Each structure stands twice: as structure tokens, then as C-alpha cells.
Length: 70
Image (cartoon, rainbow, N blue to C red; front, top):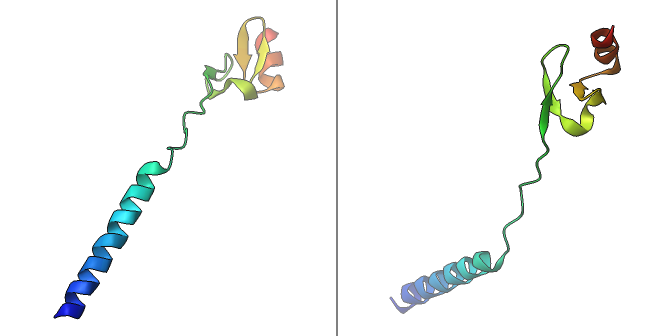
């Protein structure tokens, strides 16, 4: 009977240690976002950093930019 109580006490202690350890870990910042823009030629949305910009318009490729400006 005393062994069972000892095992329960050890399990409770381990649980409390893990619980307090998880509280001390700072949360990771997952808010790395980028503005999305719409291609003026085909309408597809893509990240602003991957787009081609010309005359205040955004395009998904140089081919779409050239076709739009003709």
C-alpha cells in the first residue's frame, strides 16, 4: 500500500514539474505575415514580396505585367 502511495506522489510531482516548466517557456511569435496583393492581369493573390510592381499595379509575373501594359 505504501508503494502505491509513493508512486502516486512521484507521478503528481512529475506532473507539477512539467506543468510549471511549460508556463516558463515563452510563446513563439507566429505573426510573421506579409501583405497580399492581387495581380491586375489574372486576379490571383500573392505575397507582396513575390509580386512585380509597375505603375502602382501588382502582377504575378513579368509576362502578365507586359501583357497588361500593352
